[in-house]
Length: 124
Image (tube, rainbow, N blue to C red; front, side, top):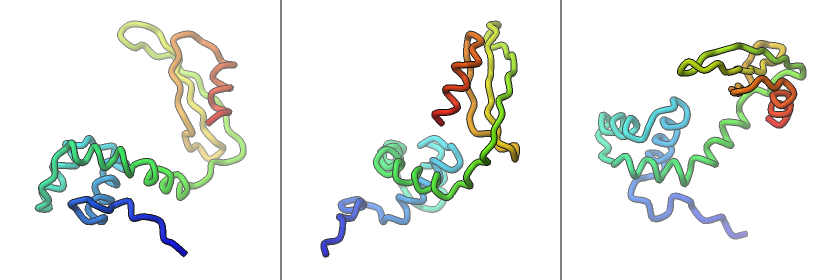
């Protein structure tokens, strides 16, 4: 049986450093420059462009693994509506939460359309 090719092949840094950088970027919502600074504190000299490329290449598989480990939402969910102002213009913020109070997703609309919001949240 032939093994799949190593995705980290021909990279300068070992897979542990690459996966740590991608983990920092996605889990803590940091920018590439922030990740660069955190790695520099640990003695790893890498540019922000390299971190951006790593996240572009390996981020999708990492995000899939995070989604699989995330607890599944409850079977019942409800929709909340809030009126907010963004730069003086009124918008409508819709929030879907499950029976345990975990926020599933958020939608901001310029016009109030509850049916469109329900359709959006059913797809998520």
